[in-house]
Amino acid sequence: MRQMLILGGGTAGTIMANKLAAALDERDWRITVVDGTEEHYYQPGFLFVPFGIYRMREIVKPRRQYLPGRIKFILSGIERIDAARKSVTLASGEALRYDCLIVATGADIHPEQIDGMLDEEWGRSKFDFYTPKGADRLAQFLKSWQGGKLVLSIAEMPIKCPVAPLEFLFLADAYFTERGMRDKVDLHLVTPLSGAFTKPTSSKVLGEFLERKGITVTPDFDLGRVDSKEKKLVAWDETEVSYDVLVSIPPNMGDPCIARSEMGNELNFVPTNKETLKADGLEDVFVLGDASNLPSSKAGSVAHFQSEILFQNILEHIEGRPASAHFDGHANCFIESGFGKGLLIDFNYETEPLPGEFPLPGIGPFKLLEESPINHYGKMMFRWVYWNLLLRGMELPIEAEMSMAGKRAR
Amino acid sequence: MGTMSIVAKPIELDADGHLANRNDWNEDLARDIAAQEGITELTPQHWAVINFMRKVFEKEGDAPSIRRLTKESGVDTKTLYQLFPKGPAKRAAKIAGLPKPKGCI
Image (cartoon, rainbow over all chains, first blue to last red):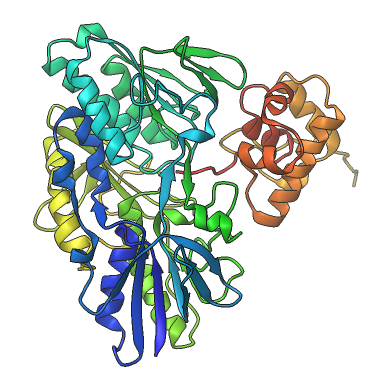
């Protein structure tokens, strides 16, 4: 019996488990998924929790419910991957041999990486919304907040869902407006990027959105430390930004087991071939989703597109053929802009997000880089698509490879 | 038929203002780019960072992040910001004749 081992039962690992369960012969292959927790969170939902749009219990389900019957699920932390011996040691000490390994261990926030971030003010005047606990605490806090200066700070790139900080501010603008206290709230974005976003066209469009909504941007700010007493952010060059409430996006890093296995970069992301998704220099190891060092966005849509490429490459790999499918860096992200509207961006390694229309049979077209209610409905509908189609590895009417159809190039 | 000697070859830049062709780079040009960026003198510590960046790029096709510079170049973060004010990763890459670090999208 050959062993297909998937580390991580999040978006990437679950999609892959479903695809492989349907394709690999049960007499030849055993498929195992290892994850340290039972709960599968719909992570795009975290953004809505601080504003009371979703409650946490509405965006969590049991992991096992999304894994087909033939998959063996092991609830355990991962101690170490030993690629030379094709074996993975679990936290319990048990060793699992594999013939093919898929690393889908994701990324998490690490507030302890910033001096002065984790202290008694964490959860009182300094918050995150990338964890269930953080998003819940922020929701509680905002309910009774009387106003002041709210600073959203991105510590360093890359982060999961690079548009989430902007969406947070757009939703905050709408939330405080609807509560009749927008005039009492100062909204700020403090970012290490040179503008609102990474690529020129979308950075300009999104920058104008921030301006129109009265949100101040401090660009090129490389966060060195937080001074909780004085309530200020201090950059490495000693420039400062004060806050009353800090919403932090701390450094995002890969799983600690990657560091223990000595197979990650300085952020514990696994160096991976950006086209084939094969781990650099390791035999029979593939990397899917946020766990890799790919220069693509860390987002569920990306994990989904990658999974179609990886599925083909793994089938070829186990038949001893070279990988023929190539990932193009495709990402597709709805951006909530508040007041029941949203934007959509669609891009890849080579093509930056462009304006135009995004055709989708039966539902679309959606508007690209332009605000419209249909984009908001797309985003809200996506939660259903996620649980019922995407995780189950079903075909979605959107190709893994980015298309130029509808896009207006400059 | 006469000959013509080219006095100064124009240097091509990419959209970010970095060298378009890495082969155009030399140490004198690095000093010129540094001066344009407001860094009047390149000290041995500057060169240590620049050379480390070029080495990483040569091997991996992308310039290292600040986090990696701190970890592996032997220069701590605080000093990096003193050497290359306002974003050491971007600035040092520019002076080293490398494209803007991809970072992420």
